[in-house]
Length: 183
Ligand SMILES: [Zn+2]
Image (cartoon, protein in one colour):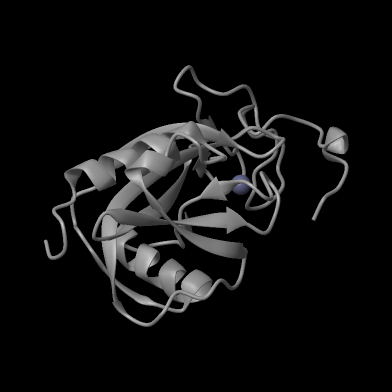
């Protein structure tokens, strides 16, 4: 982990200055934000990185996780993480649930959260996609970048120290929209 982020030479929202593929200096970006490499001809853009999160609901409670790593270590978020290249969002979420909690989840296909936010001291832009889910196999045990698992009711949502406000709204809407017991 980079401890001193002040040494980072430019913001992640700035255009690329060198081709990430071959290192050739790039010219000024077009108004659209893309810059084309004169050597390999590929165009480079800055984009929000897609991430997926789960509001795992069981009856009138939802599972939240305490972060074991920076950024926002010690604060609360939901299970999930960044998608791998080519990975479908629902499959990425199932993978993250296995890695972080050791459980198999069933995921509702329609997202209930779509939000853009910044992440970490550099201000990297993230596109957060949130799904309602439920555990179909296993008992959640924190692993990977999760320190602790908590089940919270809707009355506890306001008093929970969420790392990101969109997760608070996400968990609240998942609890409000969830039928009791089975879907
Ligand atoms: Zn190039």
